[in-house]
Image (cartoon, rainbow over all chains, first blue to last red; front, side, top):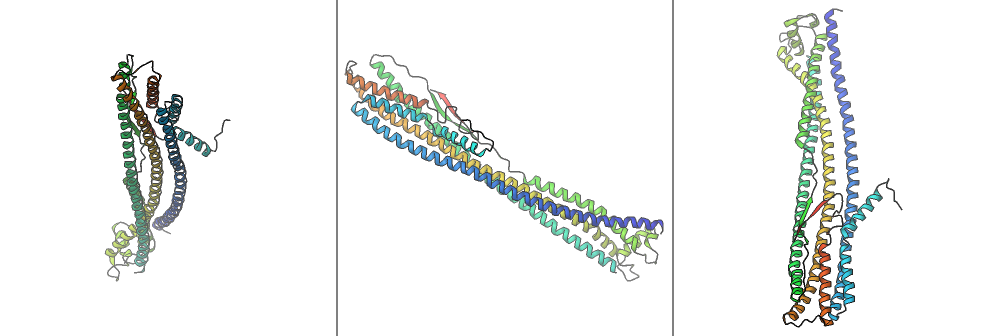
Length: 133
Length: 324
């Protein structure tokens, strides 16, 4: 074999390198494609869990606020009936007591209570949370 | 003529595969861009809605402040004047009147579709350039190894311009004189062979980048969906603030009505000098009025949210107050 044949043979190895590179690239692509599809499925699943968690808190907060304000509205209605009646009759003791209940009830904000509710909910969600009794 | 057909077929197959993968990758990138664009649009839409809700809360807080101010004028100052008319001294406290509510809405980046595309295409081209250089050397190497020149001499035994001409003629299926396609066809085949692996490798690289771009877009889309859900939760809290403002406002109105009724009664007595501090009935009327005024004052000072002013670590609401 002449020296130039060796040179040709060396270049023939490059042809194999092309085939090798294309095969390696194809394999790499198939791995990447599978990995990316798995990542996407995982992202979508985690996203659905996160959204469901936020929605559960949001929805319980909405129900809590609606019911709470509704119940308070009814209580205030009744208290003002008593206030009006005690004003008409001059019953100052009942008036003072009723006004005091109105003020105390007004001071309790359902939004502050909702905060406690949200804290309790996050404590329930946290597997490491320890309740101090 | 067999060699150029075989090489051409391989080149065609590799090229077609590369093109199809490249198209697939470009399609995935386009899909990723579309996902990002829609995610950004829905995020902006939801954010605008929350901002307008925040502005609504600000207006409601402002209206509550106007209501407080009016009560101060219509009840507190009027009662102070009435007490002075009755020969006693009275002082109206300085109250903190609501001036509005500042609500901070945090931002979420929904990604940049242009960055994704530019990066991927660049990587595809770089990979293609590398494959092209390898394949060009390999093809000429293979032809040099196996083919013979039209003179019958092995190409591997030739050198310089003679070797190049013989190589191109061999790729063309032999010289024109021997019934082959000659150097012209050879040049075309060599061009195709050089380009095809580049297309295949480039196509695969673009397809892989397309998959990555789709993942990145999915991630951004999910972040936006979570951010939208959080905005919905914030809106529920804002609705709660509005309910609270209206509740307190309604209480102030009701107490004000009771107070005004009493004020009018006592004012008329005072105007006609009929108010008698020694009369139990008159004093009970005045005491009832002062009880209502005291309740009004306490409700005026009641915090809208909670004692510490915060609702939730996720939402930053600052109730603005001014002294009045």
